[in-house]
Amino acid sequence: MAHLKNIPNKQQGVVLITALIMVIAVTGIAVTLMSSSTIDIKITNAAQEREVAENELIGEVQRMISGEANKGAGNQFFLSPDEVTSIASGDESGMVIANHNGMKSKMINLNKGALNLECPRRFNFTAGVSCNMVQVATTIDYGPKIKNSPANEMKYSLTIVTGIAQEMASTGKGI
Image (cartoon, helix red, strand yellow):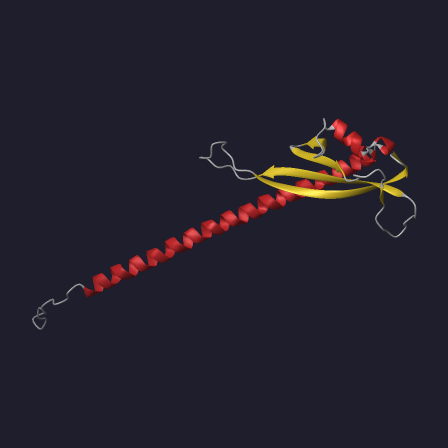
């Protein structure tokens, strides 16, 4: 052991300072990656909520149309513009024909003149048959809960507008 000599320690702490700078840089990169992944998760959740709302809305539109069609001659798609306005209490913006699971379907009769409109073309078009043209707008509200908002939630609206052409046997009367 006699051949071992004490070598004077002349390190100035360069390795320590370099290591601390590397730790700070890696920590900054990690924080940036974590915050961007949080934003990605929020975007993905919003897209999923919209997709669920859209699928629910499409299902409601199909349910509402088939429900009215199953009523036969008594369905509301045969109503004239005056009947729609009188049922809607004079509101020309339309009448609510369905309110199911928080989704409202509002009907507007598009026949503004004295005569019904010609039916749109299709493969078995019959000349001389007029149509009662109706527009149905179905709306759903959706959105994430937000803790600090005044109403404790944030809502977005999604609306599907459907055009319905109901063939009429005579003026104002359905087939």
